[in-house]
Length: 168
Image (tube, rainbow, N blue to C red; front, side, top):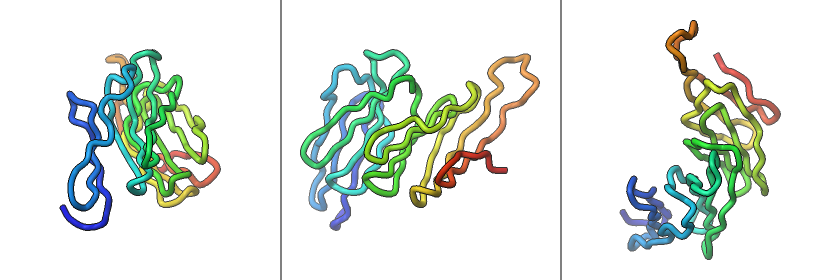
């Protein structure tokens, strides 16, 4: 890989390491610096001085944390009550979205806020945003119990700048 475009690699399943491509070589920018994180997963960023990484927090049951790289140092922010975060995207350093289990959606606009919680049977698996007033999340509604009258099916949500709504 060559060029001026920065690139990042997500960590391997058994090792918490994030690498950055600077156009010449891969450089390690993160290696398990927080003992309470038992894994880091989805990542997204706008450039070499803006990377967001979602991690699982072992000290706070039912919590994931977000690591932010500003080009100089990492900062850790716990997102309390949000186990199972699965995807991250954004359109700018101050417009970042994270989705996960139970229909949860977090948004960063300078500070993190919980903007949606869904039913227990909704799992959001992906998210994409065109701008801060146009975001999409996809996932599934699972039949969690064998006696459930409702079969599992897909789910699409849309953010219009003020509310999340089901898209059919």
